[in-house]
Image 1 (cartoon, one colour):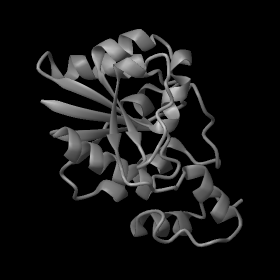
Image 2 (spheres, rainbow, N blue to C red):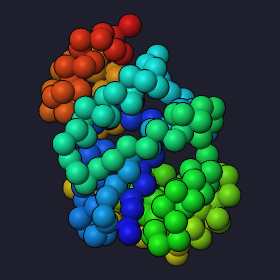
Image 3 (spheres, rainbow, N blue to C red):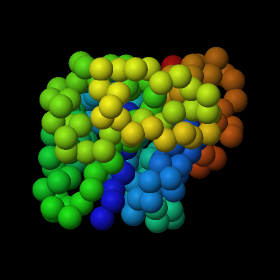
Image 4 (cartoon, rainbow, N blue to C red):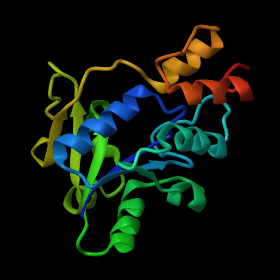
Amino acid sequence: MKIGWFGGTFNPVHMGHLVLAQECWYRLGLDKVVFVPAYLPPHKEVGGEVSAADRLNMLRIALEGDERFEISTYEIDKGGTSYSIDTIKHFLEEYGGDVELFFLAGSDMAEGLSTWKDVEDILRLTTFVIATRPGGVESGTPYEESLRRVVTPGIDISSSMIRERIQNREPIDYLVPAVVVRFIRDKGLYSS
């Protein structure tokens, strides 16, 4: 079984996340992509004063009905700081020896790999996939030979940009799934 593992804060989940997951699912011939929302990521802050439960609920409604995608609550249930190596070991134990794990990441992740906990083990236990935009420059990281690159459509959206647009009372329609827009508006998320 070939499983893509896509971790992040998803704060909020947006169309860039979904397109990356879809393209990797298709281009790599994955059986499924498992989204793994972090409780506390080690390399970035969770901005916007939004609970892990709200981030998880936004992800659930965004993925509802799409059989290619699943959600693992492992990192949220565990609490504390989430390290990729721990989650990878959890998945290998959960799925058994027949699983082939593909670690899906945006191109911004490649540059900071040398700061990750047990990065050599991560690269040994998974196929580390970097989603590269068309015409994107390969960064030449120290681990470049261990990375697999998948070209995905260039969608220049980030969660921080979505949060900023909400703060500035700018529309976010078509940047995030419509059901997530409604959830954000109904709960008044990111607006204070």
